[in-house]
Length: 219
Image 1 (tube, rainbow, N blue to C red):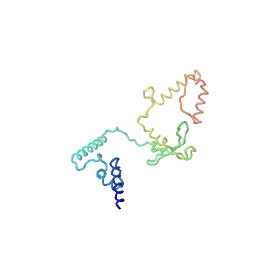
Image 2: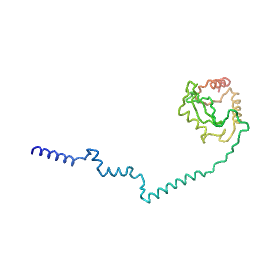
Image 3: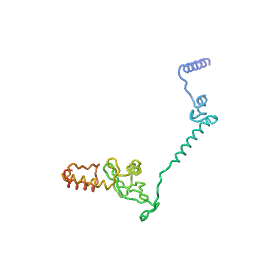
Image 4: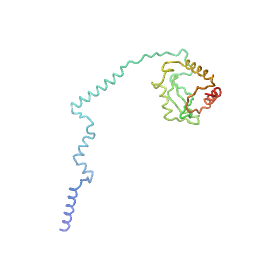
């Protein structure tokens, strides 16, 4: 019995020496829950992030910030919008029914490959791109680029008019200038005339370009 007591005392002494030499680790959840650090963490789950609602200064500062935010939000609503004139149709197109969209079959070229899509339009304004179920390249599906392509139509940086050398022009002037350049190049069988384009996979456009190069072989 005395030997057992001596052995227990020796083990207790070794345990105390080990605790004194190295860091102390928690041996149970109850032991960590009884520490002062854990109790402080439970009482303030988000330290230094939430205002002290019992502190009058904190409440006053919070109301000041919120009041300034609301004032700025209200000021933005007072911006004077440009005047717009709404004029009804003199002769409304038969296919235009308010609230009922129209779908137009078209194609989008991505990397030189055309994919058939359906463009949803409300009163002449494209609003959505859907896949064309009858087109073998899409089978009714679309990707992110096709869905986002509608936003480019309403991009404020998109040119609203035809420009030439930084000045506003018109399509009529563009056709006139293009025809004059073509006639001048035609005197030299197209020498000096170039067509800048991306990858072309459209048989119709490719045939038109080929017809042009046949008529102007030096282009």
